Length: 352
Image 1 (tube, rainbow, N blue to C red):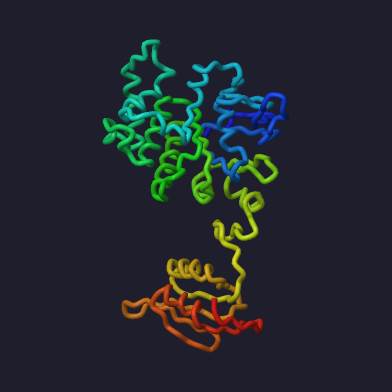
Image 2 (cartoon, rainbow, N blue to C red; image 1 turned 180 degrees about the vertical axis):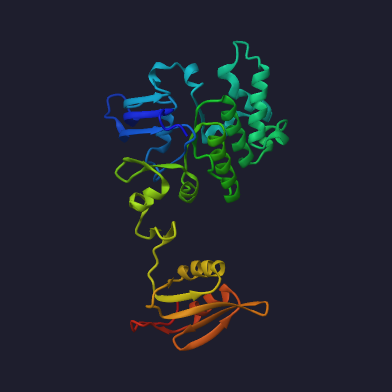
């Protein structure tokens, strides 16, 4: 990866909105960062913090309130619309309103910055369009119309069009919104591969924090005080920026597990022994009803998960009582309905 020359950099940038005779509504201010080829970057932050506005400003759709944006070392203000379209392609959530044209035609629109004035596709254009269809897995859909497709396939069409535009920078605003979990993972995996395979900088905004943590080379995090922190996902977690940005009274980020958890009041502490997969899902289930899994010596009971002659048993040893259950659901019902526990700290819990 070439870290010497950035494809995108901003200096003293402020973004937001300005109306006549009114003070500017600044969403983000004093930003300074650089993005490099092959970077897969996720832009995250709370609702309304300015993610879409920042992407639109970088793309030249709206003007910055102050500061400068450089694309390949050139000031964005020095590029006309045609020149800019050779540097940046953008996929917006509202792009689905493009109409009901055949998929190949829509992907072919990505070649418009490179066509002659007649808009005639060259052999090179056709190769690039076919490559974009191939990379995004759309060859079997190329003659279908947009309205015949699912949301996930439509989103792939817009990404293929951006890939056919053949720009060093691809911006995407919430590309996985409204998609199911497998489709989200498929889109993110595809975009990440595109960044590496075609030497592009891919920047996308997302509300899916888990996907960002799993997939991003770098995360651009908009903090609660409207600043930009840009670093690897791991460093943003370890230095506390991730928790500071998203923790709420009832929801906390677990730095040990890398997930957000409901901040339930812990009533009982149990130790779980057994295979890792069943222990993980049992722990998740118990957490919903206020039972924490504790790995130190200070716990109120234990659950041993044992495979016995083809059956899986959850063996509970708590409060001098021993019981056997044959599913996570049975274990939960036991605690939620009638079980009484006197904890080591002297508290009696009669139901959860």
